[in-house]
Length: 198
Image (cartoon, rainbow, N blue to C red; front, top):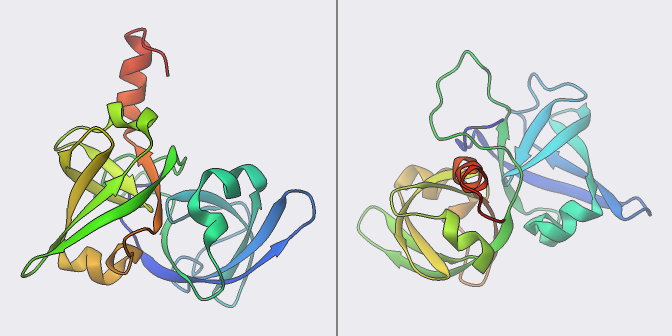
């Protein structure tokens, strides 16, 4: 479980296909690896990955083909920046919202509107996820917990503060770039309990 508060801007070091519809990905992140051990969970652009090895500020993780196909991780190349967050500790503050690290779909940046100190960014999202996104609700974009400002039939927008623009990959995403989306899990549970189909 995560909170959607990015701890560090890391970097993809390498991605090696393992020949069985998966890859071994190495990611540089001195802060998140400072206490990481084999088996720990680290969110990479919102995708929960399991640490296989740690060596000198770089951790490696096995990424299955399913994950590469259903998230934007498969599009990353060496040198690309990534948002990193260690799993939440039960004795710490919950700064964002409850984030599982289970990506629901891939969205796309469709517009950026700079203002004096912040920026409004609009994202397209898959139609099947639209019903879970509400104005003033929470959504995770590339692992960042955000508050939804506006909602349309197939889009939503958020306001990004200077800290988010500077310390996460959302500051450099361009129109057309893919992003990992995780909707608020509470909405999915409520729908299920009310008898709705997913």
